[in-house]
Image (cartoon, rainbow, N blue to C red; front, side, top):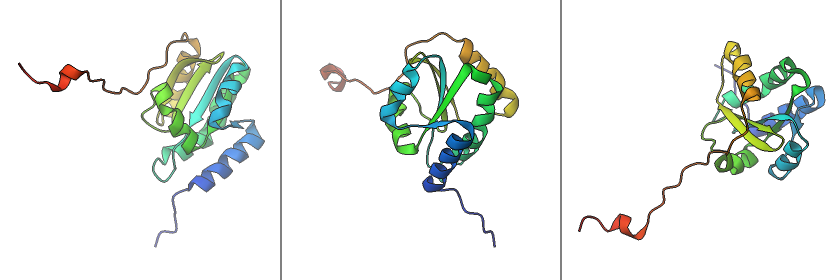
Length: 153
């Protein structure tokens, strides 16, 4: 019989608190994101999902301090728990978790979604650090006018 059980949101909260105390990864709430990003510079924010639904969330939360360390002081890191992450998803066009949101001076740069191979991560993060700020995509919501339901005339 297998004694393995999937990590829970409580275990994820404990992991993120441990990453905060050991590695300085800020564990922030939805309302704190803008203030954290407005301090300036490049920011990587991990948006999480319940690890039972998205096991990659656990993996990225464990690896994130190593990613941040490999870029020295160029990149500050933070993480959000699943509920605030889901609340911010539409604002940044995020459709898959875990998501790594990149901001510069409070402005949107881009997102990496899901888990990457270690070999790919360094290049992907480096490209985000060189990318210009841009308008954040949003999750598309279909817009229908009165004529769209009218059919053919």
